[in-house]
Length: 167
Image (cartoon, rainbow, N blue to C red):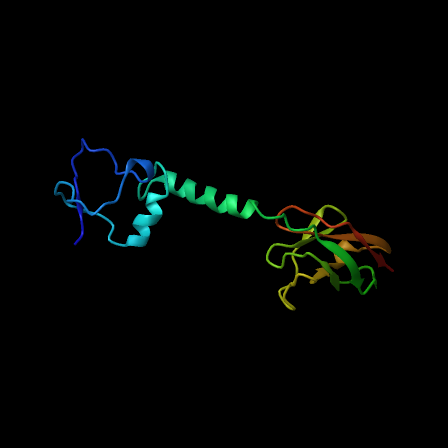
């Protein structure tokens, strides 16, 4: 049997946590609102201090709990570039480069060309924690020389740069 809650404008929002207790005693005064019947939701709300269903405080509390849990672990190691294949490319041509290494975040990693230009990895082959493929455009290698490539994960960590020879 669902409990009903008062709807009077003089009644403050129903709060969870220390302000609300859940018991099998008689239901509150009758009204048109129905209390949560899903015991899991009621239990979750009872652990959320100073929030009621729909309150922005509950959303903030949820983010806080998630972030505290995520932040309590060790941070991911920075990406490390161990090789480029090929190690040398022709200038003024589009060139696909496979970047090998460790610690790449396949979902968020980008490649930074010469410390300033962000290049999104190609979707095929799919990015992996140890390998990314990018296309260096002809406009990015107009003359012979060299360019640097680094991997930057979504958490902001950047690998040291590897040098690609341009002939």
